[in-house]
Image 1 (cartoon, one colour):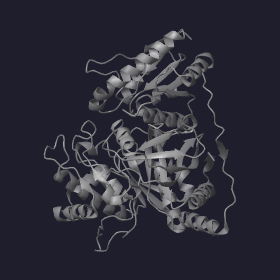
Image 2 (cartoon, rainbow, N blue to C red):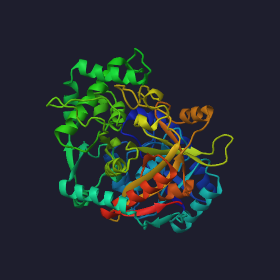
Image 3 (cartoon, rainbow, N blue to C red):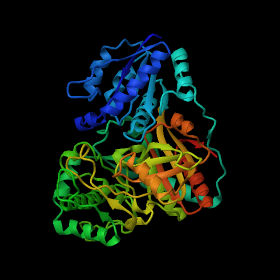
Image 4 (cartoon, rainbow, N blue to C red):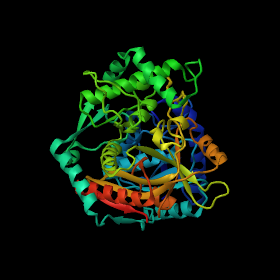
Amino acid sequence: MTTIHLVASGDLRESANIQCWPAQKAMEGKLISVFAEMGHDLIRAHPVKPQGHGFIASQREGMDIFAGIEPDAPLVVAEAVWQYSHHVLPGLTTHRGPILTVANWSGQWPGLVGMLNLNGSLTKAGVNYATLWSETFDDGFFRDGLAEWLRDGTVTHDASHVAAFDAAIPAEDAAIIAAIKDDLQSRKTILGVFDEGCMGMYNAIIPDELLMPMGVFKERLSQSALYHATKAVPEEEARAVYDWLCARGLTFHLGSDHATELTEAQVLDQCRMYIAAVRMADEFGCEAIGIQYQQGLKDLLPASDLVEGMLNNDDRPDVTGADGTVIRAGQAIVHFNEVDECAALDGVLTNRLHRAMGQPVENTLHDLRWGGVPEGGDDFVWLFEISGAVPPAHNTGGWAGSESLRQPAMFFPAGGGSLKGIAKPGEIIWSRIYLQDGALHMDIGRGQAVALSDAEVARRSADTTPEWPIMNAVLTGVTRDQMMARHKANHIQIAYATSPETADRAMTAKAALAKSLGINVWKCGG
């Protein structure tokens, strides 16, 4: 290799591309220097734009750029930011040369999240690629991996923590699993999908034909219908939800400037959306729903994050249906953030299984945002951070320990509050459903959400997105680099259990349930 091309996929929102460009530019500078030291020229395949960034910002733009790249040339996709994978996926599907995806190990902008999204999309599409990540790009892990890629077009990672799931199931749990499977396949269930795929996450779309044998079907819904239903909710109903949240102790950080602060009017619109979403789930018989909260609705309504956190919590405000009765009183309505259908399927299975086993049903996805060794500590601790809301049952202090801050204006011009908290210490089960070789797979493992000092928590929050909720977690028997190399998604699903023993039991039962439904299950870690 001598000349190697670099491409950078970006956001659909120019405000995000412009604000995040300095981090991308700095990373590219480091990469260019490292490649030069190793005797190779790394050249951008597309220029920096007059508006002040060098990101590919649409699918059509990406197609046009790839049309000018030699198909057999070695190619680096460098990501220091969240990116929309469909901007570059079409070109990557026909590129014949070796592909390397690279991210900077930083919490500032979610480059690791963007890279994992792309990796999951490439895996689903059957595109061969190698992947690397680094904080400084001068460490032995990165340089050794890069030398291998420059020589062979591949990077070898340690996967010794992974084994095909095969465990005996107690009779009591086998009966629960059989009952859930039989109910799904006889009565069937519906995932309510609002505007499928508009976040560009090809890896998050499950083909219908893979869901149908399980008894799972999609109701494809339009966010314009959700907008209409939201605006039709009377203010007195919205205010009743708002008053309920205040009575539970949720702290709203309110101001008066709509452009930069969270306002009461924005929160009331979020409460309207919550009522509308519950009623639409009931109207269409959806067990779970997913709102594409960033695209489309961002120009019309405040962000849906507060809505999503409420939906995923058993303890949530009552909403009455057309017949005057409360819809699913005291029960969470599974919400899958960003319409990630892999998270939807996982969430439904977790909700059903944990309720039957007497375990906490609240579950949510998080981004694999970042991580490191805390100051004064010895062990690596992940920082999982969802882009707006978790069920408050996951937070230290529950509702009273949670707060709502205005979503960043570069993402959400219409504002809206997050549902932020710091995850409580406890035993967790983590999992991820993904697509590979035309089939569904699940990686599953154990871990602990851990408590860190107030100063460390504040530092981690400030180094990422302070408005968003976080979980500090240790994964059992899985190193940082093993996790990054293996994981085929930007998202990871998290549920709590009441003790180490019940967590082990719930993890094993969930793996067995998924396997009984035809999913290939892989146990990760000890």
